Structure formats: structure tokens, C-alpha cells
Image (cartoon, rainbow, N blue to C red; front, side):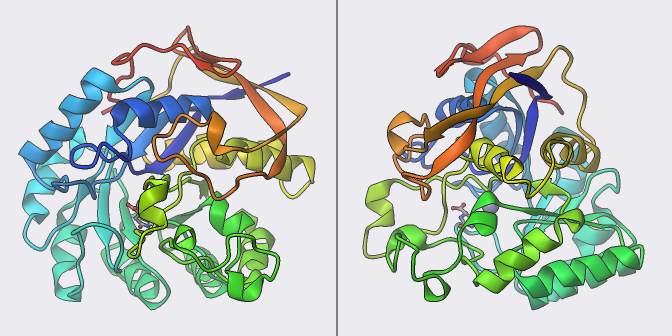
Length: 354
Ligand code: DOR
Ligand code: ZN
């Protein structure tokens, strides 16, 4: 058994307010603790989206009464709320800008709408962008022009990781994260063995990429600052419907997948700690969680299955995967929050780190 710091996931989607049949602050933080995460940063594409004081209050009220691990809530950038969100910044995880199509209403197509956010949002917090391919290049140019930190969510392509590498070499304040699904799954078109095949379950933004892209991510792990789950729960019924929404659950499969990769020597345990604790803490300016750690058995083998998960969505893209490395215990601020498959933390015991 080894001890690691409490993991921080800087990118989760809980569906409260608006779609609690998919997930709420209770089930989402339950899943977080069962995955070894003691702190999560929640995205703003809820219904309503979190983009002003009253919607922020709505999310934080739900979180305060239900969360079992520590958390902060993102604000969403809209076409006309740059001043409002800049004022709310001290109460929020950071600002999220959706520059490409995805799930929910928040989207800033017009580049003219970006500048007010880049000038007004306080520089001690990053702006997180959902920006794929060429819009990522545009976002990096904005980071350079405005000389402020930009964190790029869920990168998936070779061209993207190489672009970020080049930007970092130039001293542009850019950081990035990658999801486990973009590290472990490729698109079925490029992978004949992919058992998910062409069905709605595979829908995710950014889409699963080619094997060449996946290899490029592994080859450039030093460029990747964070492993973030992009936990995006939709129910199995929704995923197999005629109009499947994009997104995979990830909170409960991330750590075992990454520990398996450590076992296969694809990264070191120290890399894992950097990308799942130290870097998210530094990038998002997050406080220390005193007396907080997790315990894992690096040698225990088991099979991932939705039947043992706490997320409300009821499925996992990693069903049946054999992993090596299991979480046994989570201690959060001196109290055992999870032990041997059971979440012990009380509802409402999580604190808002902002
Ligand atoms: O696949 C995705 N699902 N990508 C996103 O960017 C949003 C997310 C969601 O909220 O479901
Ligand atoms: Zn997301």
C-alpha cells in the first residue's frame, strides 16, 4: 500500500442545477471520492448555465448542502457578461470559454466576444478554453497578445500537443490537460478492435482521435500539465438514443487506468502526482487540503465495471477493462472519507475552496 496526495480533478460536469437525473452534487462527489479525488472543479454548462451571481448562487447552494468532497464552481463566459464574471472571480474556480460546439448553451463563436474576457478576468486565475484544433491556435494567440494564463481543456490531437509544446517554448502562458479517454481510446475508424463501435456511447467532444494522435499524446507527456477526467455523465438510455449527447463518465476509472499505465512504465508515480495533484493546484491557485491523502495498492488487479460505480449515469466506456492498481482509502481533512468500496464522508461535508 502506498500513500499519495488527495487527487484534484480540474474538469468535471455535475448536472446540478438542471439535469440531476444524470448526476447531482451528491452522486458526483460520491463518485469523486470513490475515484480518489478530494477536490473537483465543476464546469458551468448546466441548466441554467452558471454565468452570473444568481446562477452561481444556485450551484453553490446545492453544492453546500450536498458535496462530500471539496470543490469550486466555474463561471461560463457569455457574449455580454465579461464584467459580471470578472467581479465574481474570487468566488469561482476560474472562467470557462466554449469556443467550439459541445453540450449546453454556452458558446462564443464570434472572436470579437473573446477580448473583453481576456482583458477583464483577473490574471491570478486561468481562463480555461474548450478550443479544438484551429480555434486552439487562436486561443493561444490571445494568451500571447494579452499575456495572461490560458489553460486548454482536453487536448486530443497530435497537431494540438505540438502547438502547445511550441507555445510553451516561446514562453506563452499556456497549460493543458488531457483526459484518460483520449489517452486510452482511439476512434473506431482507426481501431478495428474497439468494441464500442459506431454507437452513441462513443459520442464525446472532442471526438476520439486516431491512434497516431493517441501515441503523440503519450510521446509528449511532459507537455501535458494535468490529467483531468472531463467527467460528463449522461445516462445509458440517453447515450443509446437517436440523438446521443456527447460525454463519458470518468471519475471512477481515471486513477486505476493511470496506475495501470504506471505499472506498464508509461509514466512514473511522480508524473501521476504532478499531473493529478501538484499542477492542478498550482495552475488554479488552489489551497492545501491539510491531513488529506489517499492509499492505493499498486499491485491489486481488478476489472472495471459500471455495476460498482457511484455515478448516476450507469455506464463506463471502460467496461470489462483489466486494471492494476486499486484505491483503498481516502482521508479528507483528517477524516476517512472512503474505505474499501464505501464512501463514508457525510453529505454537505465538502467545502468550497474559494
Ligand atoms: O463530451 C463532452 N461532454 N464534451 C464537452 O465538452 C461537454 C461535455 C458535457 O457536458 O456533456
Ligand atoms: Zn468538459
